[in-house]
Image (tube, rainbow, N blue to C red; front, side):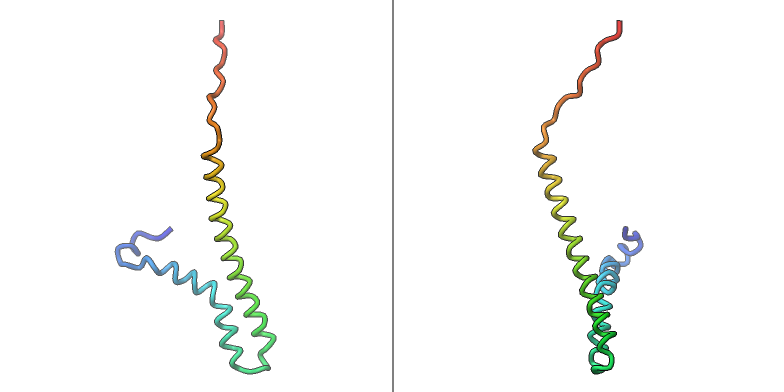
Length: 91
């Protein structure tokens, strides 16, 4: 949820920027450290692998959410609506 004060100040993009930075930071740090040479290769490999895994999970969960939403709406439209059974009057 975005705080209302941010909407008035025009900072609606700030949460999205933080989220993008969170997902891309391990990959970016790994690429920058790769410029240091072969001595940092194990650290670079771990950071790049972590960054790619986090990014893949973000994409997969996003696509999964879209597909779940699409198919649940499709099933809801196809469902037949029946009336609940009425109870018998008590004597």
